[in-house]
Amino acid sequence: MSATSDGRPGFELPLLLLAGFRTLIDELHAELARQGHPDARPAHGFAMQAIGLAGASATEVGRRLGVSKQAAGKTIGRLEELGYAERVDDPADGRRKLVRLTPRGVDALTRSAVIFEGLRSRWAAALGADRLADLEDSLRAVAAPVGIGIDTDTVGWFAGG
Amino acid sequence: MSATSDGRPGFELPLLLLAGFRTLIDELHAELARQGHPDARPAHGFAMQAIGLAGASATEVGRRLGVSKQAAGKTIGRLEELGYAERVDDPADGRRKLVRLTPRGVDALTRSAVIFEGLRSRWAAALGADRLADLEDSLRAVAAPVGIGIDTDTVGWFAGG
DNA sequence: CTAAAATGGGCAATGTGGTTGTCGAAATAG
DNA sequence: CTATTTCGACAACCACATTGCCCATTTTAG
Image (cartoon, rainbow over all chains, first blue to last red; front, side, top):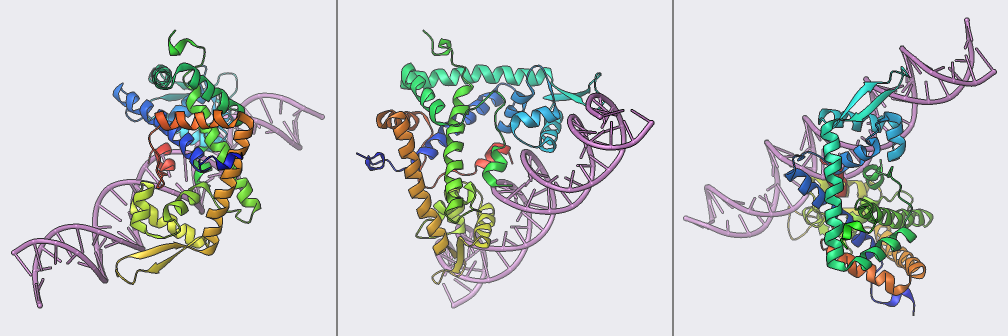
């Protein structure tokens, strides 16, 4: 039997993946808001992840996120305004400015990791640990690889800048 | 053993879901571009889905997409420019304007459905039909429900307008 | 039937994010 | 010491979303 004849319309699959993603991110941010980070947005989380605990240059952040350095610079500026990151001059290179997470930024990142673990545990409890592991394995097999430095040009990608 | 101790970091799950979604949508649009719709964007597809073959009012489209009527109106304007939709006065209600897909819009929607079926078949071949079905079942169980009228305020949701 | 309320659609202003182009300052290559 | 490359930022512009406001029309209330 063909894979298209088992009664599941093909367009449902992307919707389910998106719904799963959104569910996790929404719950993350709801919890993050409760824990003192009400103004953190998904885009900020990805950017902070790209900055990392070690810090990085704006260009490097852009590279990790898969966006232009200008876009990265703007997002970093936003994180600065929100108190999540700061820019300091690189003593070794007068052109560069090292972007570092503030303690508040580190706190947000740390809490996010904990919350994500909790959410995954919830899914594991609902589905069974092996079914969840299988789901992850499956996605890893068919989806384009995701690294630590994610691809987060999701906004522009979706809207089509 | 706890679900958090099986070596899989929690933050990978949302990334995998996003990667899966993006993979499908990217491949859809690559194929759509080959088939005569090079300027169709993901957002347009969702909007056309919301308009549907029967047509709808701008307000209704906004409701289905989960965005304001102004936002829906602007997206519809965009679809008009691209030749995918058209606005006609509703003879029964002078306030309303019925948004309808043009033949080109219907073509894009029809082709999308076919392409999605093909993509799902590819996944089924790679994973096995039952593993894919199980993946869908799992997501259906833990993710917020997705209807026909999807939630596509994904852009603003992500960026935080 | 007329006046008030609700509804549909569009305009304007604003916010967030992304893009390309450009430019000055600093590092590096020759 | 020049020439090129790289970093970071500014400007202009696009796409999408939001809220506030306004006008036309339909519906509902009195």
